[in-house]
Length: 194
Image (cartoon, rainbow, N blue to C red; front, side, top):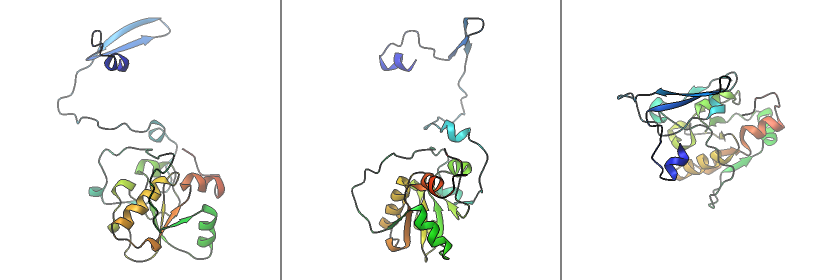
C-alpha cells in the first residue's frame, strides 16, 4: 500500500479496509475499518523491541510529567555523533566510572533515554530519567558532578552539550562513553541488551 501511494497509484488502495490473508485456508478477505473521530493523530512510531521487551529494571523517579513529551519516540539513538563542536564536558568509560564509584564517587546520575528504554534496563543507581531532547538545567542539582548516560553514548553527548549551552558548568558533566550497552559489555554482562 505504501508503494502504491509513493508511485501515485491511488486506484485499488485499501482506504478504510484491512486485507487479511489466511495462509492455512489460502484465502484473502477484507475487514472494514472506521476512523475514530476523537482519536489523536499519531505523529511517531514506537519501538517494537522496546515495547515488547522483557522485565522491568529498577524504576527511578521520572522527571516532571510536564517536561516529558506525551508521545515520545523510543530507541532514537543515532549510530554516530554528527556534531562537530567540541565542548569541555568529561567523557568517562564504564571501567573508569566503576573505578571512581568504587572509590566513593557519588555523582547525580541522569538517564537521557526514554522511560520505555529505562524500563528495559537501567543502571541501578540512576537518579532521574529525562529524554535528551527535553533535558534542562532544573533536572539536575545546582551543585556537584553529574553522570549522564544513554544507550550508546550519542544522546548523552547531545544532552551534555545542551546543558552546557543552557549554562551548566561543563566540568560538572560526565558522559558515559558507549552508554549502557558498553557498561553491559564491559562491567555487567548480566544486564539485558536491547
